[in-house]
Structure formats: C-alpha cells, structure tokens
Image (tube, rainbow, N blue to C red; front, side, top):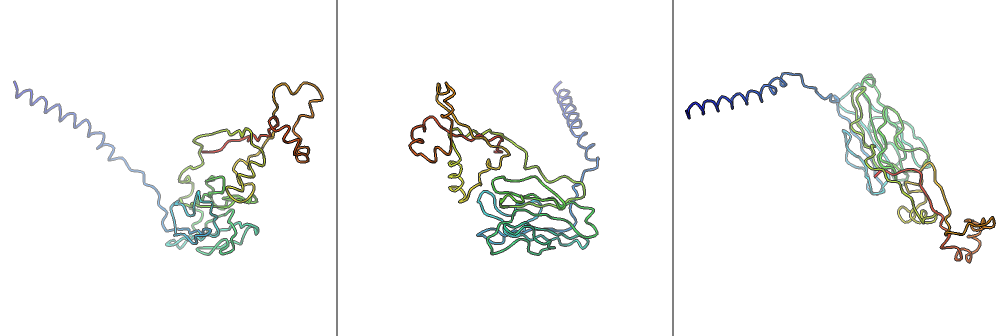
Length: 275
C-alpha cells in the first residue's frame, strides 16, 4: 500500500513538473526581439561654469549638473567607428545669439567668457543620416528637464535668459522613440502665495540666484494681483478709496502704516509646478 502511494506521489510530481516546464520550452522556441544597437560610438562632453570640461558621456547619460545652478558654457559632440555618419551642432549663447554650426568634436559655445549656453540644435550628417534619429534633451534653469527633441529641433530656451545646465543625447534607428519620458507629471500642486507681493518675489530672486526673474512661477503665462479688505469696509461708493493704490502707498509711508493690516497685494499663479 505504501509503495503504491509513493509511486502515485512520484507520478503526480513528475506530471506537475512537466506542466510547468512545457510553456517555458515552448516560449524558448519563439524568436526573441533584439534591441537595435547603433553600429558605432558617439559621445558628448560639456564645459561647466567653475568646473571645466566634464568626462565624455554617451547613451543618454547626463552631461552637466542639475540642482547646482551652474551653467553650461560649451559642448563637444563626436561620432566614431561609423565612416558614413557625422554630427553637426549649433549653440545659442547669452548676449550673442546663435553661433555657427560646428562638426564632429569641435567646440561649440564659449569658454572662459562667463557666458551661458541657452539652447542647442543637433543634426546628423553623412550618407547614413537618413537611417538614424538623434534625440537630445536639455535641463534648463528653473524648468528642469524639457521634452526630448530630435534632428535639428531646438533644445533649451531662446530669448528667455535661462541657462542650460545639463544635456542628454542618444542616437537610435529611424523612427524609434526617445529613451524615456522625463517630462511626465507625477504631482501637480497649485501655489497661492497668500500675503505675498511683488517685492517678496524679488527678494526671493536675489536671495536664491542674485538676479530678478529667476523663480519658476515668474514664467507662468498669466499672473494676477489682488487686494483684500477687512469685512465691512466696502459699504459706500466712497469706499473705492480703500482699494490698493501703488502710487499712494509709495508716496506716503504713513498711508502704508495706516492700511497695512487691511491691504495685502497677493500673487496668484495661474499654473502649476512639477514636483
């Protein structure tokens, strides 16, 4: 009896193993999808404010710095081991504008002049250029990583006086998507600066970066200033004099002291910030 039970248990175990292994063996015969690898080497190198030239990077690795408020000042890009493909790039420089296009490892931007790189365009050249896309992505002051662009499109900002702080780049076969999407919002927070005015924002600008207009919300498409009042003050037509009047406040400090508890110009950003 015990022998029969042992044989039965062994048969059940063998059957279970066969059931588990069969799908694995079947799937092993299916063709595997192979990632297309760029048949060559490409790399990029950036010059950072107060740091100098960084090590060469490739395959969408970050070149530059993020979160340190340091500007990109120059860049070099090169393709090797692929005689039928080259690269050309053009940089937009503070107070200068778009520079001439340079090729294959030449210096783009400016070095030793304390000028920020604000934008870049990158294109592939050579007889094989039609078979590949070059993707690149800029990390911009107060804005973070911007969307991936490709094949000569503008990365960064033009005419907004924002510095580029880092860049990523990747060459893929024609039609392939960018390596990832770093612009997807994870959280959206609406900020209402209750009790804050324009001078509070300017003070924050100079405290954090030493210049005006550097807070992310100052680039929002719309901003509104409102005045608030204690309850019961708006009673007659004459109460219009209680509205906030910058000219009156600036001309009379006594007026400012008189109405300080009741006059709060606040700034309400009309957009959201990515966290």
